Image (cartoon, rainbow, N blue to C red; front, top):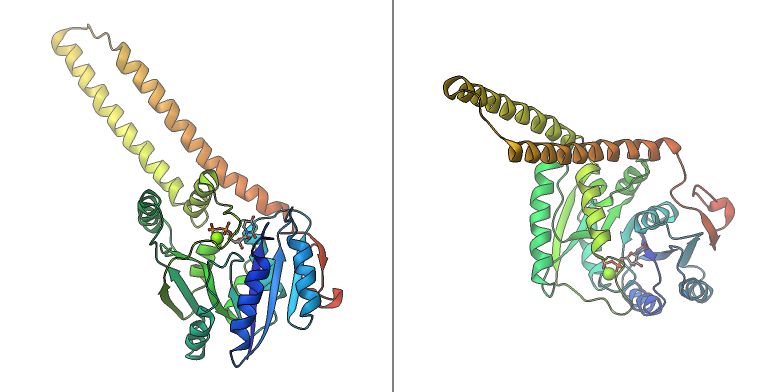
Length: 316
Ligand code: UDP
Ligand code: MG
């Protein structure tokens, strides 16, 4: 049994060596072969130097790939999955928020025949507002989206080789992994672990980024939002028809004298706003088509210790 641990890193110089040491210690105690596949996602700090050093110290068990710029965590995970050669792959964050002690548990569940072993974090220690917003978001998303997304379930998981190959067979440019993991299916098992704070360095998720991510979750999987636009439009036509009938009735019975300035302004502004939102929604889908049709590589590699012949990535 050979395990690959895939680690996307972006400006993680403060923790990467700690992570490496802690993870190796755990892996060494397990009865398996392993490799660590680091992906430097265009870091602007000393992450790459650290990776070179780690690779020099452990040449047989370290692979690293360094991107030409920051392509985002999704691209990092994809590159890692492509480079991984193991029978199973674990995706981990570099900041030790995914405790390496859990690897043993994951392997145990893998041995029992599960293809996806998900470690779900509890939200203890998170700010209550953030927790509440997340809960609400997941309820909303699960109502809309075809695949099931779970609160607290992130990228920390073990994937069997068939599951990895299934993921790699999805060529889309816009990758919303949370959904893709769920979309591929396979025998999945989930266990919980206590929330851990980041060891050092800082999170790359700020409010705007979270908002964008949330939007991606809503539109990455189907065209249900467009459907909603259609229903909303029809509902409005219905309301307008009723209102027209009422106004006509009043005019016939009481004679014509209806100032209606406020009604007019409100109707114009509300409808204008709604049309903008719906246009934006359509634009968002078209934008996605635009990106997909360009067929650009997901990432570009500037440096790696994987021999060129063995390198399976695009854009190198
Ligand atoms: N990451 C990355 N590219 C990015 C942003 C983040 O590879 O553009 C990596 C980061 O180095 C870390 C993991 O993704 O290993 C999770 O990032 P972070 O800890 O900032 O997210 P959080 O844990 O706060 O959700
Ligand atoms: Mg983190």
